[in-house]
Length: 459
View 1 (spheres, rainbow, N blue to C red):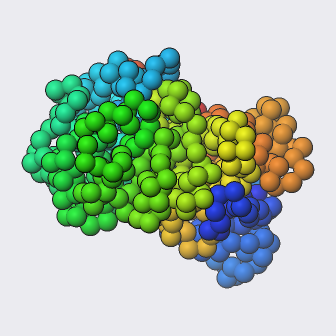
View 2: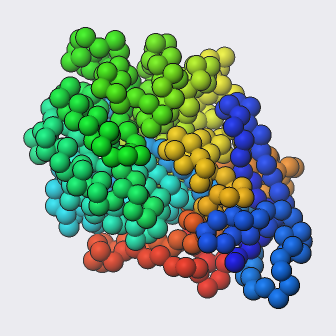
View 3: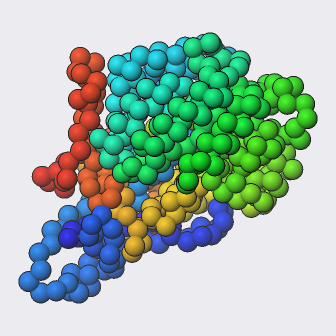
């Protein structure tokens, strides 16, 4: 039984983005038992309601803010080592940067090193749950799940499927994909904090036969997610249209195989059409908005207002490595800036909207809305502690904030991984040891029940 004491901010409601309200409690107490929040309220009230003589520990997080763990709805595990390659559009970036690196994960030893670095990046940025694009190689997918399990983070991932248009080493066949996917799903799906995600790379590299195999996996793995890319760049959209001449649009290339539903998260959807938005809304699907990646690749600004007006659910994704880093604080800020630059076509966003996109919206998109995404009673204690160093701009900003919403806006604007004093998943504090270039790739990760002092930091 542990009490976490601090200023707690979250967005537990179901409001549409653009109208989200912030729940703020200064000097709050969250009573956590078995990893779950079992009581929440003013510190004095929660402590006063405990049985006399009972044993409990108080973790003092009053310096800074306590937020729900961040949820990344789209991020690529094999691409952590190609972060920062600028100046190229999507298809050129794939050919010159991403795909050659992804081919190296055929070596399981290499994949283990990448997996360790990737999971470190997630947790160091405060991400406690992620929908992860896996690898084209089954052994590398195993390596990722192993790394995530050791770290104790919530993930959904799977084998990436392509059977054309990519380097030969990255291609598979429908039968092979189906067999390898079921093997991986039997090992990892709903084991600990892991789930399986059916993951064709995109329709450009997946034939109808391979998409049909993806549909079979989705049917045969109960509770699996489906994720892929859609409408990211104009060149990609045109290429897909040329390959699928009988499809109504890009989303239809997936929908005609039964792949679009409430279990579906499609990344980007920058160059979308009204029929596609109508279909996504009718199917209850979600879109992962990756603002930094859209800007870095020159893909275009995300039409958030159109998605919201059509009732399409939207969450945030970092899209490492086309994106510019793991931090969803940065992605939230970039989402805000993008909408501002769109003028009347954009959707004005508030700090609560941005927190919702980075937490509860992502949890809902991944089918985890009843478990994580906010810090309500009955939810898992997945949390991040924003605790800036004395005298840093964020510290100054928080000390001079006029309100809880003002403090949240400053946190979303200024927080970096260096400002995180702790990350918890299911009530357990997660510690990631930064991988050393000379260390064995199998020994990078460490998970602890709790640091010896609540002010221990991620470094």
